[in-house]
Length: 618
Image 1 (tube, one colour):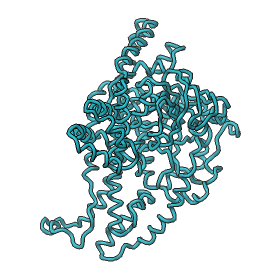
Image 2 (cartoon, one colour):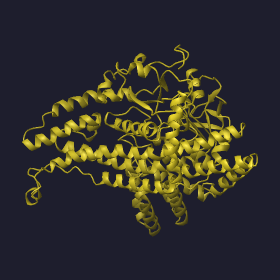
Image 3 (cartoon, one colour):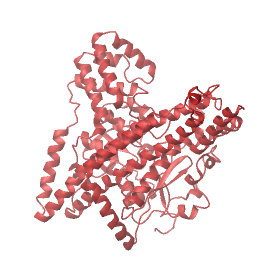
Image 4 (tube, helix red, strand yellow):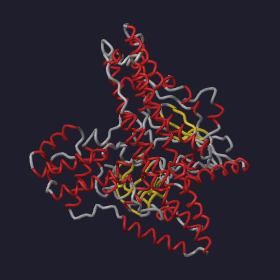
């Protein structure tokens, strides 16, 4: 552990100030999710970094179930099932409304050896049977999604239905409502168990290959290693492929101008409905709409971020997002530009790189190299594909059912607004639901109606206050070495990056980050805070964001480069930039805070540097 001096650690949780108006926020979340006197010694011993990749702003109490599910899942598989040799699970806290996580490394050689033996046996079984087990995983996920989709919360009527008597069920249908809520939350937790069944191993397979290359080729760059697994056809690119295909059809049907002038991409459902009316008035428009509607299920069940909060939109819930991307693609095609992902070029480049480095090895080393490369290519697709099944399809159904429950509580008279439910955490919702059902059964008014309404009104400004401030990057004491694979590969939280955070990242002339994708580009930046800012991005601008989500793919056809605050070599921004062949620097920590739209910079995707060229703004 690092020495406790002001220069070698971040503030502790108990040293930080609460945003004005947010006092008492701790009471909103499950007690085990927040720092306390009982956990202070433990909390002060770890490095906690903000998971703004998944929770870019403060989280409502109910939405904290996502943080529970994620880190329960990763903890189970890292610590108890596959036994990662050098790390346990990521501990989690909600602090000032933001989600913070802490890697827990293992340094005892004897314990590492013990866990390595368990890992080799259990992980080896999965690696040897990857395709078969991955097929079963997809079946499990589809079953979990279907189970959640079947859940309903029908209104409570004056009398029980006749079937209770005719079928002699012997129990009230109102019990189904209580059970369905438990099924919904339990199934959500289960999807995140499934999520990490393969993700740990996906990272593990890539990291093993990565470490072999670093040892065998001391001068090899991180990007050269990552490019050896580029150009793979994975499900994660399918939604964007659907948009590109719809853009091609729009060009063929002479609808490019109709889409552009009809307001495709304009925020709001009114414009989308008006555009649809225009398209329905012509044969070509109706032909195109048929293809558009066919693509919506399931490919538009796609969150504009990562789907961890109840108020995030999907493409289906805000059609202006996919329509805007389609219109931009159509304009590019009409202008003679190639919008296809350069798969063939990437595949040719990767084989050239593989050949060059393999030629430097002995026959025995080359055999090991081939084996590890094949493993990395086998497991890599899951690193991106799991997002479709879990963060998008499963989350879409979960939040739809949660909103259905919130409307049930409004109809029952507990709340005035469906939004109110989300100011309660999941255990409080369980209590309130039991009150509603039991009061109805007895024939008395809801006993906690005023209590919960008053609590919602008290919490509403508290949540707003927490969301009004940005999350500091970290709290606590950094370890000597960060070894957790998720922290390193996905979040970009490395030992070097933390040391730069401690130095406040205040190089007056630029920023340092993780090399995400090769290339050098100069240009003005466009700072995007959320998906709602995407229409502002102009061709040739460098996209700057806290993190990019999978649904932002169309933006990569517009941007000349990408800079993010958080992310590692295997984060979405880095992977997609490599696939689209544009430079990227990820995990800078401070890009959105220190850059302003219009400011010119140079980014170097090989060195991971961002150089300020001037201070011009819009």
